[in-house]
Length: 224
Image (tube, rainbow, N blue to C red; front, top):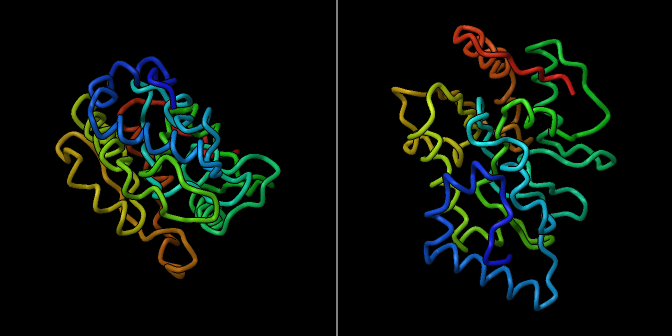
């Protein structure tokens, strides 16, 4: 990572103070050492801030918070739960699709690329923005959570009426960062198979569109 962060301009302005803090310098230095040592880091460098690139700060309508990037080759693309076209759809995303089908008559596609959601204002943020190949959670303690907590707080402080979808206990623990008098929080179990069928029937997608519709905003076209 270079000293100059390559990130969409509105986010660069909003997060300028964070990029100047010691913890972020520690993230930079850690990743430089990892790259120099020949380790494989996901997502690829240009996609680390892809969620920010696809959804500018003032366009954020919905936040879907993930935990860790996918750690297998070809999967991570800088958007939570999303994988590039041509990559097998992960189990959690299959369950998201199944709930979308039940909730909003969604036609399940043959790919897992959620970029079209991001371009409509669905901010697909992972709490950790990088991971070492085949080592889930390997960058959990390098400072990313301080950064993404600040991102959530910036949205909470400087925007109004954003819908936060918090899936699973990890995401639900971020609720304390959100001003509930200004924003909407939808909570559910994680879509992972480890949670059984608990994610089913959360109806978050229709609920989000109902909130947007009541506020006079364009609804999200969930179809991919």
